[in-house]
Image (cartoon, rainbow, N blue to C red; front, side, top):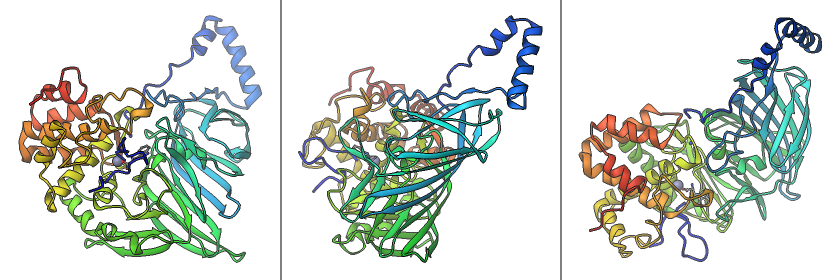
Length: 499
Ligand code: TRP
Ligand code: ZN
């Protein structure tokens, strides 16, 4: 049985397929220095500032990164985004993207300049609050200098016009992410930082926002993104514009855009959730038998984890071999070819674990992957597969007759401490992460364990959480000291007890 999680072609490494905010940079001691100049000097300075800007607003540059432990330049300081309005047109034949991003954000400090993460593509023009802004680029940082400084707390609108041929990125683990062109279309996947290849933004999971994405493509092509399709409009010039809407917060790595000659299936789950699935030509009808079970899976998962957190569900099936992994893009995961049942379930489970409750940093990845893997085990147990206990035991024993990944590298490092950015999607984060959950269950029993899972997603719905948030929550919710589990299984401060 192929394991659900996409494997790299070599077959050895299984590709076991988001704040309290991160600490902000310290305030610059600018005012302190001004104070030491003495009152007259300060008055003179303020008068000068007023003369220059027409106000007493005095900003300073926003930080160029949020100091994520693994992706320190991801995201930016000094503001938080509320909404992205992306208006994109794509020519699949030439591979050319033309874009306008309208970013509505709130300043969290006075800002003289701020950064957006953006990779490749040419920036044509930037305005802030309707006025032309100066900008420059270094690496993947686009620095924007508004004509007028922004006040702390000000809600401001930035418009970036850009275009070119988007270029995918190579992850620290060697896999591709970002805008991925294929023979007759393209697919965007952004974990962890690929979304900066096709729109400028605050690309860190701790800054989630609502999205409206309009994709204009030549007639004959379909264009799919997250959430609900608001309209599909013939533009009159041989193109079709698809307007997609996500009202609930989305972490930017979970935003997708897919262009292709898809066969589209729509429907509803038994409880009425709208479904929209797009399948590439050459792939099985509806994306195959496993995807056909999505409505049933949504009901099953809601029973286990609590209400489905978003307004829509579905899938995007890219041509097989497009990617070496699947991604849980919000409401509409991207698969490369028809997925098997466990993979569909895995990406669905991420809608609760990862998408609604997002990691505060990329170090907390096991909160995504350990939980989604455990969800697979639960589904499998309920549908004729091995019991979760049997699967756990098989991993401990390295018995791959129960699960092909049982003799993988799952024990190589503790899930809460991947050695580096290239390890956040490695086996231990998935499998040993799932084993952490099973160890908690063994300590507290089924009733308190499932109440913990449901409480976790309910109390952090549409938010962000860290590993420390989880361990504290688990102990509080179950009334149990779980330090032995954390030490041995999660952080690896103690050797694992072996049978
Ligand atoms: N998070 C994805 C999943 O669990 C897998 C994934 C995304 C991945 N990007 C990756 C795996 C890069 C390996 C490398 O389905
Ligand atoms: Zn996953």
